[in-house]
Length: 212
Image (tube, rainbow, N blue to C red):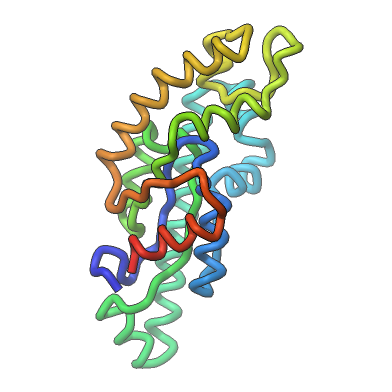
């Protein structure tokens, strides 16, 4: 096991629709670990969806909720570690030598802009950037959108905020955004995995090969 992931959580980051949740669940299942999604935790603790928080209360409120979700994960990591240390000497030795992985986390697409949340995640996790191909990510986004309405429905907030009217508009907005976010993800990542437009199984194997 590589030193940079020993004794830590695996934290998946990347653009929306890059496969964070799908692959996170698959990797967690493969390794026998618990899986968490920060968007699900926001829903659980705030009792409102991340998208609704952003729409009703704005970006700052959403980022605060996202940071709080990450803090809950940090607290869980510490409690998990302490339980293992108290259980017996063997488990204590595992944590001391970094042989034991903790859990798997999938984050929201904008986590790279939330410095407070990132600092918390980095305190207990290895940041794994799933680098999607632009066309694949864009295709998935426009596939979910409803361009028959004005404003267009079911678009990520960072696209919807620009008020696109057509699929072409949405793709152009996404192009500029993708470039900026891609650079930011590279800056914060401990591990980068280039995702392909391939089967889930093939991408899971690629991630595992990059980690172990």
